[in-house]
Image (cartoon, rainbow, N blue to C red):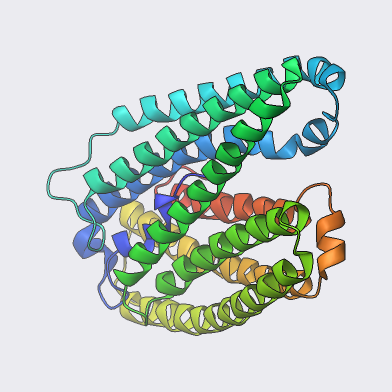
Length: 332
């Protein structure tokens, strides 16, 4: 999945100790940029997610005849995913960031470049899907075995790249700001996805399912601890930020558009609590996944935990998009 730049929503806002009206033009420009970038990413995410949702279709492709029967539906999904990436690229090309705008330590150009890079990786992954499908239709076992690792590794590289992007962005935000913890939850989410996919692959085809499950259990236990700690610390910081915002804007008598801007920013800030609830869910999924033994892991037709995490990832992205749109005045 593509990196989601809307996580910098609150980094684009003034500090809670500053009256928002003092920097309203800059805040509005920042929010508009983040919202547009988030919309472009969401288009790509939704298109690629449809391939994940088609898991039963892929699982049915056990013989050349069944592959031929399923191929038209799979190719239609891949074509739709390509269109989504193309639409995302077009939306990126239409974004003109305000001169001099920076979000944390990043420039808008670097954030757009990150999304373009992830889109390019998605296109390459779709090409590997094509090669795999053609080989499977022909019943060419050698070609299938050659294409499958590239397909899997491409998926893992997308996930690992997202974890790195989130970690770099997290490092640019002070740890006493709740957005730092929100970004950390993204890091742990992608970390869990990578571990779940690779462990299933090792258990299913690597010949050492117990070792794969043991390694996965250790990684997921750490993810669970980190996610719970991030959610707890994020809630503490969020409560302080809301209190500071209310204290420093009380009695200033904002009217009209200034009052509406303040209300939107405050609501988007308050809604960040949803991200910390997702962090708790991530911890629960990781704890449950850590208890799965090697035999059970190898018996899964596809990585069950990875599918659950992918659904959680989509919700995480959707929540960020809602917050960016709300603060930019695009949500009801």
